[in-house]
Image (cartoon, rainbow, N blue to C red; front, side):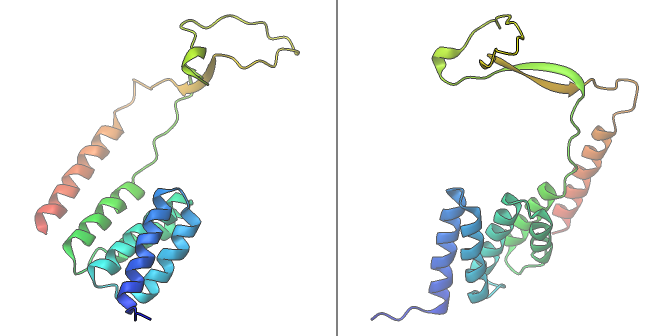
Length: 170
């Protein structure tokens, strides 16, 4: 029987974890990547890549705080590509959420197949017996406030300058 080193086992678990992540099996991916993490040396490229994918998997299942903690722990990783990936992910994970617009309605067609598209919505009665799906669904959006200053623009400019300063310092 062939001997498998700890590093080879960590690499195999890592590859299976990535494969499961790419197939949408996030819980299985987390389990495999956690096992790989326990076997790998964190300061290596493999150890860093395992943690990057583990952060992705945590975020995919809604454990964003755990993902952020992992990325923060990798900010001083000895491998440059791991540090860059961690900083990039941290920027995405900590970015402010965009607010939903209320009061604005946009019609989005619901297509079950290419043959069901209707270029113009057909008016239908709203009787209680009408359970047929509408060709369009309503999406509620808020009207933009044109009287206030554009804070998003200033935040985006400040964030860009901060990221450039950090990047230039490395």
